[in-house]
Length: 146
Image (cartoon, rainbow, N blue to C red; front, side, top):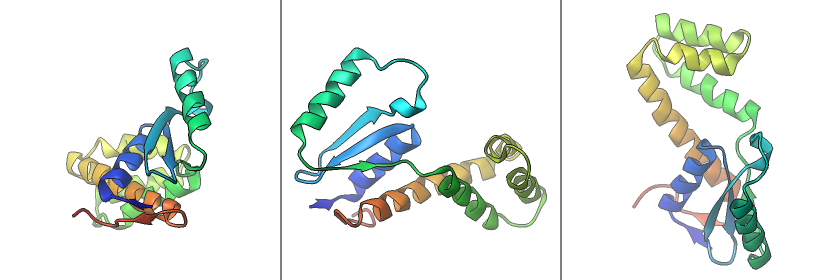
């Protein structure tokens, strides 16, 4: 089964939103589901019914896991390495080396709108590459848009 770049990007976008993504190995169909481990309320009945239906109908699928905290930290650290020396880079390095690095990193991005936008673009591409690597054993993936 081959997945298109558009499908890979769609999966990455769902992961960025905190969703759980299942990919049917037979058809390449993608199902996005709420990640019950990441929410603080009981599953919505309709969403639970949808999840049960998908799991019952799909005999073989891949559950695309969101990047771990360690992997997400690596995304941030790699991004900082691409920022030219200067105040914003120093702020980001200090954020990553301090307490609550994820929150601090996010806070520091508000000091420079250009760097903040570059971070969003970088994170999107990092997630796409993550999804490609994650799915590669089970799917042939299109690595770039056509």
